[in-house]
Length: 234
Length: 234
DNA sequence: AAAATATTGTGTATTTTTTACACAATATAA
DNA sequence: TTATATTGTGTAAAAAATACACAATATTTT
Image 1 (cartoon, rainbow over the protein chains, first blue to last red):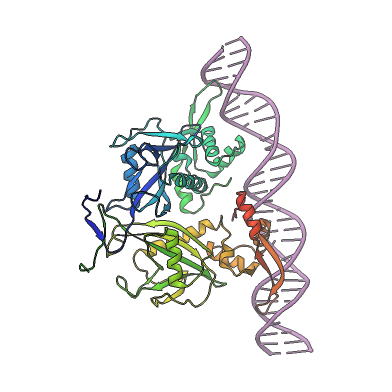
Image 2 (image 1 turned 180 degrees about the vertical axis):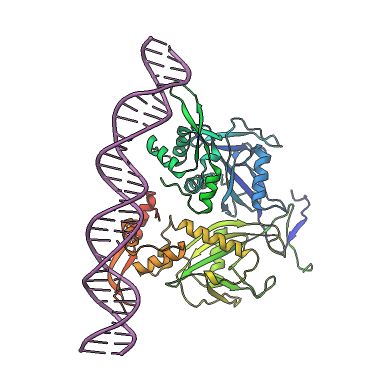
């Protein structure tokens, strides 16, 4: 290790900087998180949040987007930083500070891992494995962030298919907030916000009455957002 | 410059890391921000957010608290990170990434500058000077963060004296949110939350009727907070 | 000493929003 | 054909938000 060429030199100590992404997906019933299995030490074989080192000419946002694509081949619907984790000894190799990102993606069951053929898969929130580094702390902070931003961002539409039923939307909100809503009141509230477009189509999915489909009305959302009038209270 | 000893060497490029604090105070009428005048290049003589470089063995939070104390001699009532600013060219010297903090302090008119005798003073939000680096962006993000957290944190009590009147509290909320409230409805809402202790004392301050004083009931607040029931809607 | 001024304390009626709640319709599976 | 599970739909009651006005009082001015 000491033999490696060290060509980046500074007068003062600089930490290494990484991004780590907590990627949420929704399979229709459960909220899930995407983890990758580490191939190298430290924590080889351990599950971890996807992430990697900041490059010289990219912003922290560009780094997160690049790493996420490289490791999971997923397109993000929302990617937002929510915290810096900087305990000096959080990485045994050297000082590494990480900027944590919350990512929302449309769920696809099987993830094609990254270039380095890392295994990647979804975990239910209540069946998470041990995580490398301080990733458990980052994960916990991400859940709280998700519960916070649900009031200010239409995150349902990032996580659901472009056409979805009201019960699907409700299940998603219930999964994120860990509560349950009255079906009729939930629907009234959502429609009242004015960013749902009712479609003519229906979605048949089982031995019961068919649910109608909706889509996200992005124009109306952008209008509300720009007027500062978008807010969902529960 | 090139003659300086460069003793911290790495295999890959590492950015320098700083913290910058957007420090808010309230003088009873206006919300204010504390700025320091830079003594050295780059941007010598220019106003900037107080901040400085991360040391080897401190977390980013410890760095922010240390820098804030060193540069302003103020005790913070609330200190919370809200964003990373990382454009590769934001500092002309070298790559410097900054973690931005929001700080709330009890207002004192005159600030005793830091060790390096930097000038430090309060500015009204609508009379800010030009700022160094990308500090204008950081400042704007801080205002938005403040407007966001006012719904989840009792920030009035961080910014006001330990005893305060209802009109003072109202003026503060109005200053932060940029709106005005009906006096009676504001009082009813605030008292309804249940974290205000009415005091026997009164505060005489002018040619008019005296206002009663209140204090913050931290015990009740902690109780509400731990039950997840603290939220102020406007 | 009296009057003027500015600001505080206080309550109610109206509107809006939230909550609680039940039964008929229908797509599939048995 | 029947059973099953889930959807669509409306109303009444409770709670919360809003709009609004006048009497009280500490200081300053006359």
